Image 1: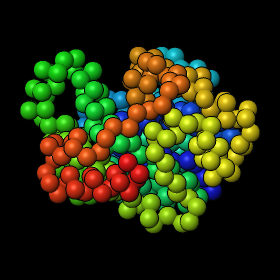
Image 2: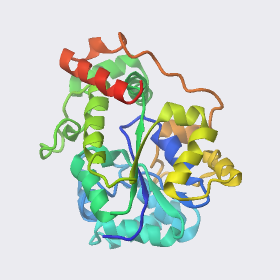
Image 3: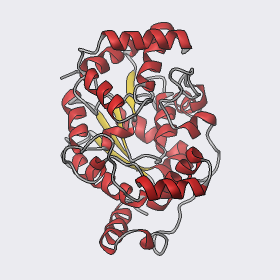
Length: 320
């Protein structure tokens, strides 16, 4: 149990987490980490096993880049290599100890984590709270249709053509961990379940809502990503005030420069990611309103009737 109070962003994949986590982390009193994935397992060794078994080679890119930056002030192939040596030498450490080590090194700044793996299971979020009972949790939302389209575009980029995407979907589904659907133990590492992006959105927010309801008063906040990114001058000061950090113009303006984060670009070849590749290729903010698609009549065909009704009700509760 730590006395630190990091800011932990809870949101499904493709829900503005990279840009929001990075711009918040640009506040003078905050330090925005790339995806650390340290709430997924109890120990660093367990995280490494998951990385190998699930053929998830980029699982530790964010951690390696963070250590390289903290230890040497640069992220080069050599500094990342030495960071990975540090990881190998400290496999015995718990993820809590590793996170505290990072926070020790950026203190008095408050760490910001936005790892999408945190919301895979309720137990991951509970692990985060057990590690940091004073942490603040920001529930970041995005319209279900916008999220689904972004996931489809992401897969299309990875597989280059929609024909390849269709073939991939037919063979292996969306390759989403079973934990997005239930809290049972994962099956064999190579297995994945077929799940639509809309189902992913729904089940992920179900888990986040269940966790947020248990938090002590004042430790949780929910915000629509579209609102935040469309009106930074309104919502950034509100988040800063909630966190108890500076709300002056200089601090707010600094947050509008996510591209100046040391993690807002592709890393070296031995740790290229740690954030959304699309964000890393163009991290500057767009000075425009984020469109919100219509809710009704745009997604019902893609899921069963019960899930469609659940999505409708949940999205309306979020203000969509």
